[in-house]
Image (cartoon, rainbow, N blue to C red; front, side, top):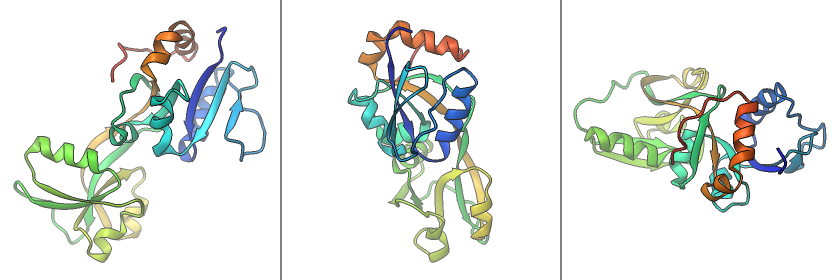
Length: 212
C-alpha cells in the first residue's frame, strides 16, 4: 500500500479488540502515551484517530478519517451515509428488550414505553412491527429506568447480562445481533480503492458489494 490510510477507531472496550486483531496481521500500535488521540502504526501505513464511539461516524462522514470501525448500533443512530465494507470477526453483541423480573413481556400492539440510548433503532424496530412506542432517550445507565419507574422496558446492548442480573432485570427478547463493521467515506473509498482492497485482502476479509 503506497498511501497511508486514515482510520477512526472507537475509544473504550472495542479498541483493545481492534489492536489485538490488527496485530495478528502486522499492524502494530506503538507503545506510547495512551492519552494521544492521533497515532501511527509502527510501519507508517496507517494513521489512526481515537474518537468517542458515538462521534466516529461524524469524523468519517466529513472525510476527516477515510475509514472507521464501529458497531451497527452506532451507524443506525448516526443516520450517516457511510459504506459498510465488511463485518469484522470480533465485538458482536445483542440488542435486547429488558425489564424487571416482575414485569411480563409486552403483548399486543402497544403502546410501549421504552427507555434507551438507541431511540432510532427502537422506533424503527417497533414501527416495522406495527407497535406504538413512547421512547425516552437516555445517555447512560438505562438499567435504572425500570428500577426507578421511569419506564417498564429498556432497549440496550447486552453482552454477558451481568448488569441486568445485578439490577433484578431480565432479557425479555433479543431484537437484533449487532456486528462490528469496517466503514468508509464513499468519496474516500473511490479515491483509495486500491489501497483499501489491499488492506482487506491483508486482513483476509471476505467482502460483498459495499452497502450504505
